[in-house]
Length: 512
Image (cartoon, rainbow, N blue to C red; front, side, top):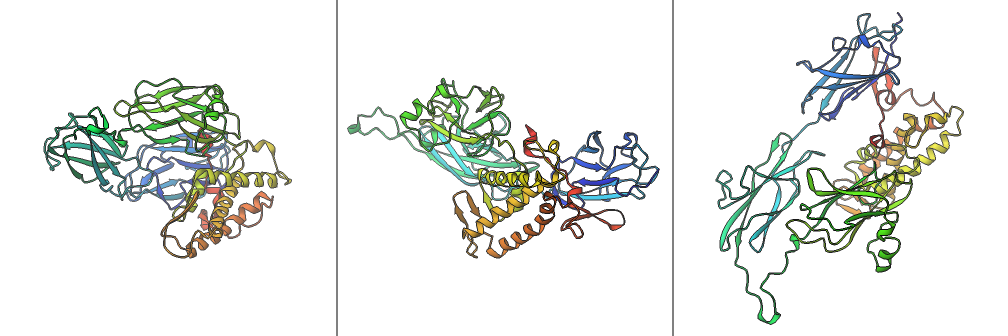
């Protein structure tokens, strides 16, 4: 039974990785097909550092020699240790290979902070109803879902009995609410909102409103005694997937409204194969953007979400095309007025060939510049075609390893880093930072207000350094650039492993 120092190629999360999500799985990449009888919690131990063991289940792939560990529960703000035992009693391959000593990896889960109260709670009156609107809390964890509890009361004390809702609490993920209850005029009321994120709950933010009596209609207007419509009482689009100009992953388009939808009109939502336009003319609605040009698909409300309308394509959309989502002006909410104007949004179908991961590109630029998804995808597309042209000309090129979104890891990483480099260089070249700490927005580009030119140049040089080994690889130079890799984890006897051995790439398109 031979000793194999490289039996474990790497682990994700990598050694000493920070901010690991609490729902993350752990991936161990082996060099050979493993004896599954040696893959158990006695040989592969997961525990809190200096703490209790963590139970897990796992899947093992015989095709790519990967073990996917699924922990029962990871806690935030906690450091964990994964130990893979070596020796003849430890993990072994089917041919009896084993490591001479144990391998240990540590990682820390995301550092959660308490959510603060919602900001700028504003109340407005619409007849006998109250409209509440607020802004996102100043302190909240990134990518964490926030829900809001809303109450209406005759008292400013959150512990006092409240008038609405009648049972428990009014819960919403939106940052505005038409409270569906009539209130007496000539009376003071209080509306209070509280944010909830994960295990944290904020303080209540409270605002007061005096319900005024409706004014009599102006005799000269011939009015019928009704107040002008409240603009907040109109149906609004809160969110669209995919976002404007972005790529549709999958086959379903979704539109989120600020109110539950009433009976849907005919052709409430349809999709056409045409680029987005700011405004449709009469000729447009009769030709290119007409209902008769609609792409075949089914429209329905999302189950258990009567404020979300979805469209699902009958068959896979053709690649590399622009599409438009068109919403009927007659879509009406249950408690608000119609949408009122025909509304449209644009998106793209996936390119025939696209490598890299947009989230990896965003992570590298986070805190420096913000870009639209469409802009990032365009840059990744250019670098994908460039990488494929280069690598396909090398002697080691194997066409079977390359599909529309799949390629060897080094190609994906080249596209990620080259795209981040190009986007940052373009931001600097456009003069988007003057060295002052100020917020700058130019089209699809936003520079963080805390970013200065020196910081951006430092990141640019770092990206240039990281790019070299991946650039060598796509040119077929597989033995260059790794004597002193920029990022390493330690193997046995302190020997470094290149970063590409410790990471597993999974494109967001693989979720389709």
